[in-house]
Image (cartoon, rainbow, N blue to C red; front, side, top):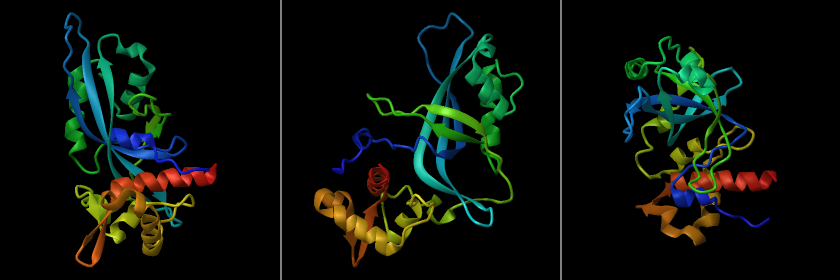
Length: 227
């Protein structure tokens, strides 16, 4: 099968697995502006930082940041109790008076207090026009003493080009393991002719890899290998 890079990259979007659970950390609840204001309805945007979930043999849960933000918009009103999805969020976040926008805004305080506000997300198929992926299902993410953020890469993702040792921590095989530095180097060299310095650049004697582009290439090729 011919290798085809995901079109989502052209739209600047990640392409998440649709059969894998991700962890979403609530970043912010913000109000969105709307033109009509005749009703008590308030449009809110919930933004989540998305993490890959890796369960080790000793039951430790390692959360690997993808660097991606996913958002959902909710309409909160006196009649939103008729919306099953709004009720799902309210139940997960333990919101009693969820018909009031103020209650949702209070989540921002909890989000800034460790460990934060989390949920488990299963993504649906991407939209054919803008490649946005809906939340196919959501559930409570139980943060416990066995949960750890991968600090080796958490604060690195603001830089687009990272060393091989950092990029390997962002990639996983279908067996849930991270590739070796050599595997990553060989993978990048294979695609270097096509993508050039958009994929890899040299800083002195050390290569720096565009982790965002590499992540997409890695995920796309893995899907082809499975088909």
